[in-house]
Length: 356
Image (tube, rainbow, N blue to C red):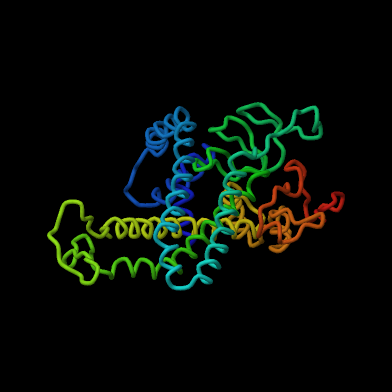
């Protein structure tokens, strides 16, 4: 799962230029260890990455809008097929079961649509003016804005983002402090929805593939003369039974799409859940990995200053404070995350007040 999720994350080429350089640095280190292989990695990296950066810088906004439109179309397509083929199948089996499945499926759909929409429209978080936080002296070298802890510059948005995780083309937006929860719960509910469709969609697909093709009429037409059924000649206005070829093709297409989405997002959800449990973002995971290795070689253990333990990390991430319960996770909620994304509490700094 970890390997798949990392490949999916790296394939998202719009993360940031800093992240891409770190990835290429590691690739050069790995291949550079091969004997008798002399490559000018700086020149090769520049030649390869510059066209990618040019495409991203000039077309990222247009590509992002296309990706967002594809997400909405995919949701409409899957839901439409579920109504068209799945609803009638289960209604013929049991009305009560169908009602239960419709209620549960719409609960998942409500959370998917809500969290995706909120992730789209919620600003990830921008640093305030320097006058509002005079105690922070760090400045971004690219946009010259004040740069609090855990803040990174996004080359796509051309601004710094508070607690930036990455830039997501499927959102056409950065994932940062204020919309990270929406992004993660959107993926989690999509994965839950794919599992739901696989469990209850499998009998539907088996049924569609097992029945015979009804594109050709069986038997011959008849009419009732008041007392008997008599055969009649085939005429042009007699409509043959509806072909099932389209239903089969659509069912198989949805199954393939759901399998791909489940594999990709399932791995990504697992990867992000692991990072949340450790109190890290995707960018911090890359930088902390080097620090962990350095500490290991020194014979010591790396300590993440933003790690408050798995349970508390999840409570912080999900914004479960001020009387909020897990109901805010299982049902749509617009509550803000804990903290302002500027000040962070260190476990070994007793002068700060940690999250309550």
